[in-house]
Length: 346
Image (tube, rainbow, N blue to C red; front, top):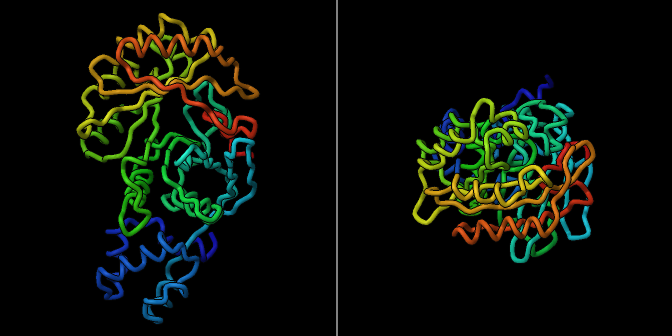
């Protein structure tokens, strides 16, 4: 490992860890706030830019720590304005992030792992295999890198952790990154503007509920019966649908908060009226809404996108039963930037 990489990456530290780190130099807590603001609000790349820190302290920090960045390898722009960023990590692994414009919102979809180990059959990321978890800094640096490339007057309004990888399989780093996203001295995103999407790793969901970590939660459901879900999502053999929904039913939510259930629709597989009616029964008693996502087709994915008529019929059945159901329009499909299309190869 190079001497630079052996240094502590300040973006890997939580606010409390930063406070402990600088206490070694006899520095007070307000210096932590200053450093956080330089890093996250100003986006500095060097310690010399932290002009309200004593010069000797800046020198000491540079001796033992660093401020990392991602290397942008490729940027693609779709006709609808969606942008896909391919980043190279320091070990030459690659990850992708997607910036999605939608009326008054500008949503950034970030990755939490290089690749994915779950192998969902409708998702391109899983076909690339799993390389490793991302560090806290690598999750956050996607925000930095995209923010630096925004047009004047633009600002990222929402963060969704549903890029490459399973966020709860990288639990500690993902949750630490989210806390820095919410920290008023760091990115200062509202918890209502951060969404974590998971296939439903039951122990981690239970831990999340017990710890009362607040942000929006989305569960990738994708089927209304155990057999179909297990065929589409191998993780269901370990954590069956009934167990995932049991945890959701008991999940700690704030007043008026709902869990979003994501349902990727596959032609002839999970898109029948019977599936819709079963889904209504499954979600009964859970404060919820459903995002219907017609499959984004990709080479190597053995399924087809259902017709608009099928999707509409499915939605109408859910809504008639009192469920909030939205058909999510997938942007950036022609550059493989839509849900399930990220492969980490540009």
